[in-house]
Length: 89
Image 1 (cartoon, rainbow, N blue to C red):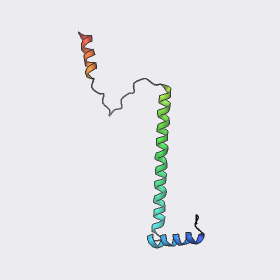
Image 2 (cartoon, rainbow, N blue to C red):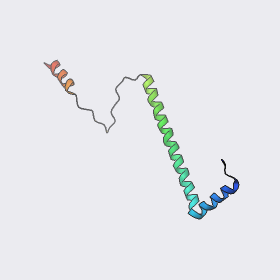
Image 3 (cartoon, rainbow, N blue to C red):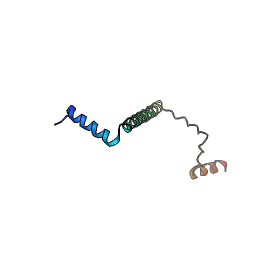
Image 4 (cartoon, rainbow, N blue to C red):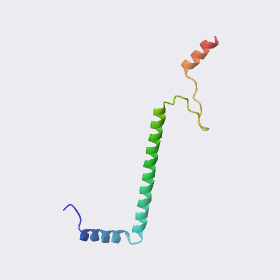
């Protein structure tokens, strides 16, 4: 009862061909393969990003990161402004 016999597989294949047609099945399989490749590549990219983050954390890099061309520097906080005013007085 746990596994399908060759007869069961044949019935499943015939039912799929009748439902989707012989030309649509290869397109569906191709699409499924592309989706699996994309998913695998994205998962590998996330793993690589995590590995890079761990290496950066382990290296203890306390140097400030440079801003990319699209990022802007944040405005000084109120406390920073007070300290600047005290030093200039």
